[in-house]
Amino acid sequence: MSDTPMQVLTRPFAIEPVTNIMLPDGIFDNAIYGLRIAAHVTNMSGSPLTNVTVYLESVGDPGIAPVARTFFFASVPAGAAMLVMWDADFQHATPGKRLVSFVAKADGYTPRRSIQQILVSQTRFDSSTNTYTCTVEEGTLELSKPQGHLPGKRWGSTGGDNKDCRCPPGFGPIVPTGMTLVWTPNPAYAGTHGELPFSDPWWKILAIIIAIIAALVAIIAAALGAGKANFSVGGTFEETDPSVHCCTPKGAASGKPEFTVAGVASAIASGAIVAACSDVADPFWRGQEATPPAAGELTLAERVVAKWVLPEAPNAGLPYTADISWQYDRFTTGASYQHAVSETQVNVHVAGPVETDSPPVVQAFEPLWLRASFRRDNGNVFRGTELYAFVLFQAPQGLFFVESLTDDGLGFDPGANDGVYAASLDLKRAYRTLLQFDQEVYGTWRVFVFAQDVNLTKPGTPPEIAAQHIGGMFVASAIEITFDDTLPCPLKAQANIIVV
Image (cartoon, helix red, strand yellow):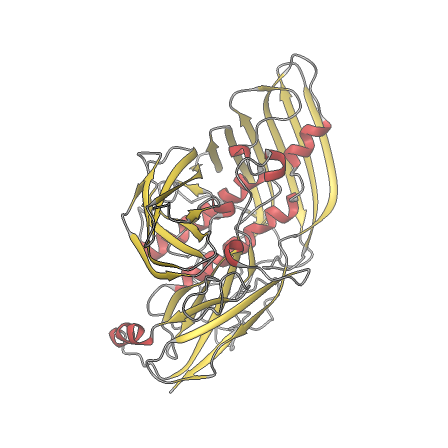
């Protein structure tokens, strides 16, 4: 028999389970102990496969401890990519590239192994200096003197003016507007350019990892209790006007969706770093290009001091701008070099409106379902593995359920890789949970849709090319960030379903 024609073709990515969001560029950071290893496993044949099993065989780091789980699919359509995830403990993970082995087996075939790399970083906080440090094999990035728009006073309040905001108090998003970054390469290097982190993303991705980790650790501690993260998040931002406002679903009794929305808002807000520092080449690469050292000199450290102004709030999928000024300094064994830039950058992680389809009315205990299409700014749709997406189904009295949106041709999805992503909720299962909180299944259910793009860069791509492909940025969200507190609650359901 031949090998099962199913493989993991792209790099697995990290999902934080409390908020359900993908970490920046899918990178795993051991500041958060509990992460999910997510991957798409693809049927590469032209025919459906039956009785498919998929499991994670091993991880090339004894400090990473995954929970054993086998996925079963009765049938996998031709060309379909199935989203699979494993919970894992990253507390003792070592920074660097680590191999992960997956095994798939289908009827009529022998098992087939797929080996892919995951990227692991390590973020720590020094309260004595208010400095964050992100460590990878190629060196360390220190982030200090952070500036940003902090959450407004209404964040976490219940109000009384029909603009209720029920977010976790104190855990609203911070929109970064400036910071000092110091890169210390390991080892010091000769020539114009140093080695990129993981030989893959720009240095700025480590900065956004720091920003999101700081936010998520606080959210996780609030949701699950202290001790779930291994560094203090007591860091302070220098506040810049205006403040940030946004709202979350209210009435949540289970599933902690307020923490999902707080995490989404923080990830969207932190994305301002990516937009301000460009996807083409970040300030470190551009600064290196402009300051070639003399022959025989080794670069010991590099610094970027950046500040930017956001004319409008940064929101998912929109081409918002950032007016940025930054200075790059290179420190070598023989001299110091400088390069400064002032310019306007535009967010390139852009998408059109979300198009949804759902039944207006569903009989009690029949499944709820939603289909969604996400269009790029050029009108083409995202397909298959190009997105990690999920929905929140909100029951009439407030309880929430999180379900994945997938384009795999199963369930309510009409076809694999056709650009239509589908999610469904088993109302019979949900009803058992609703009863625990004295809630009813009957009435209007609201559905909230979220989507992040995925880094699909092929292994072996030259680093300076791979670095221009960044994943984990929200391209669709039911929540909006605003700098205007007079606006109504900007959380918008993309669909309503009545259960009778």
